[in-house]
Length: 89
Figure 1 (tube, rainbow, N blue to C red):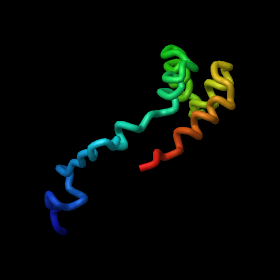
Figure 2: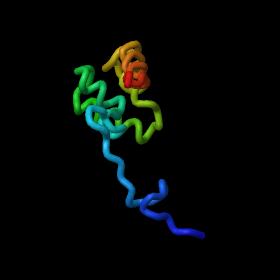
Figure 3: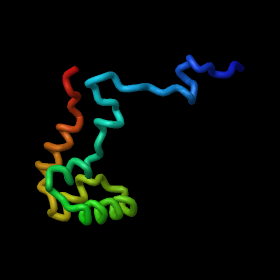
Figure 4: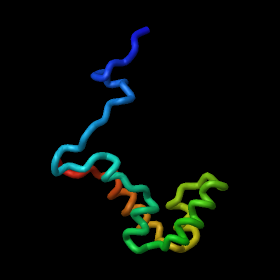
């Protein structure tokens, strides 16, 4: 078995720098709850409560906030759809 080298794609020391003007995945990635907060559709307290419920019920966050009446189902679906779209390069 060979050990990974610094140039190997499996090296743990390898880091990738985002190109100028482009966001890295970690910079552009937001979870549904963060999008709902940013849109002003839920409060931090509501997000915290929904996440706690999610841990115990294993339901999707969008289902929880819609069933509680905090966010209309169509708004959850619209945000989820926008999250899956990739920006043009």
